[in-house]
Structure formats: structure tokens, C-alpha cells
Image (cartoon, rainbow, N blue to C red; front, side):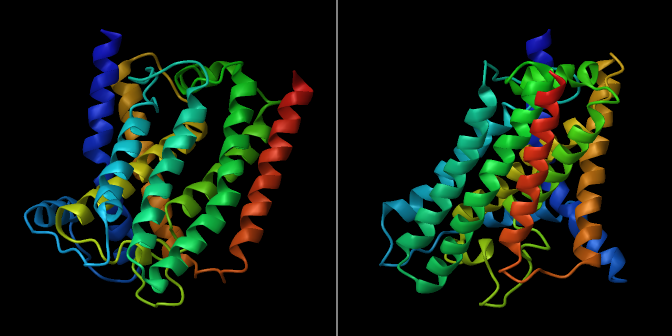
Length: 306
């Protein structure tokens, strides 16, 4: 029975991931005084792209064609390793949190290779920025997850987020709060959201993630968009699992609370993007270093308590 619930949760994640993008877009439209596109617009975009043909440049190789599928496969597996609703994930084993970080890194690696394979200096510029920021974001993510692992006594995501409520206390509150702040920064950076990157921008000198996927079209671009939506879900699930560690013991209620938490996070991203401007590129590393300091302090506090 537990395995069936875990599989259902995984299918829910796969189905609802694009909806987060729709909520973000609708929230931004509300703050701008517009009606905005429907919540289900990302699904329509994916369906439309899957029905089109792909166009490839003569300068690209099989690397460019394989990158979207490799990246989607990596984040697809990662989504099956992140639990929610008080139930363990479909794929779980000791220290699986390390593999999740590596799978997200594989997604980025495939995207960067695909961008470089085009031979475009413009896409190479975006790839360079992506790698620079990820080199600072990945250690922050690992430190934040290590803090949770140390607090709960396990380095399996299923054990951490299923039992995290039992290990929280007044003394652990500051450490968990700093860990949540670090995860929020990583969430925004890794998903190329404001204040780091604007997914709707078309300014050549400021694009990061979008510039790396400019040459994709048709089903390949659909794989890229869906992979980005799954990545948004995976990193968001880590943050929501920490901020809302509420487990009432009823699977349906716990699952609904988590899904509502994900929707609230998407709304928060829309609010941030509506109220803030992009940071200068030179300021992004400083923000990541500050997030790293929060993660280190959180880990030190947890180590002092144990």
C-alpha cells in the first residue's frame, strides 16, 4: 500500500509541475493589472510544441539532440526521489540526497553541452554564467541538506522529510530558518528566476538560462520546458517540506497540504518577480555567498546541539 501511495505522489508531481509556471505567470499578471494567460497555459504550450517538427543547425551534432532527453531523464529520476505528504519517495536509499544534487547537476551539464555544441558565442556566454552561478549554488544546497540530515540523523530524503517534524524544537528553529533561507536562494538561482534571471527577458546581455535553449524547437523545446518545470517542483518540494513539516497522519490531508504549499511557493515567486528587479550580475555571487553563510551557520548550530 505504501508503494502505491508513493507512486501516486510521483505521478501527481509529474502532472502538476507545469501548473506552478502557470500560477507564477498569473500572479505576475495580477500585480501588473492584466488578466494574464490561463493557469493551464504551460500545458497548452507543451502540447503545441510536441505537435511541431524540430529544426537543427548544420553546425550541431548528436550532443545537441541528446541534451534535452538526457536532462529530462535526469530530473525525471530526481523527482521520484523527493517525498511529500508524509510518505517516502518511490526511489529511496541511504544518502540519496547526494544523488539528487548530482542529477540536477547532470541536467545543467546536458543543457550547457547542448548550448556549447551550437558553436554560438551568444549561447556560450549564457553557459558560462550558468556554470559560474551553479558552482556557488550547489555547495549551498548540499550544506542545507546536510543540516537537515544532521538534525534528523539520516541522509535519505524520505527519512528526513517524513520524520522532520519529530526532530524540530525551539533550539532547532534558528538553524532550520537559516536553512530555509539558503534553500530559497538556491531555488531562485537554480530555476533562473528574479532577482537572478528573468525567464521572460529578451535582452541579449542579461539572459542566462533562456539564451542556452534558443536554438531548440518542437519536441526538443518541449522537453526543455518540462524539465525546467520538474526542476522547479523538485527544489520547491525540498523547501516546502522544510517550511511546512505538518503531518496529521491522514495521507490525503497531508498530500493536499503539501500541494497547497507548492502553490503558495509559486505565488510567492510571482510576488517576488512583481516587486523586485533583477540584480546586477556582479551581485548574484554575493547573494549566493550570503546564502552559503546562512547554510554554514545553520550546520554549525545543529552540530553544537548534537
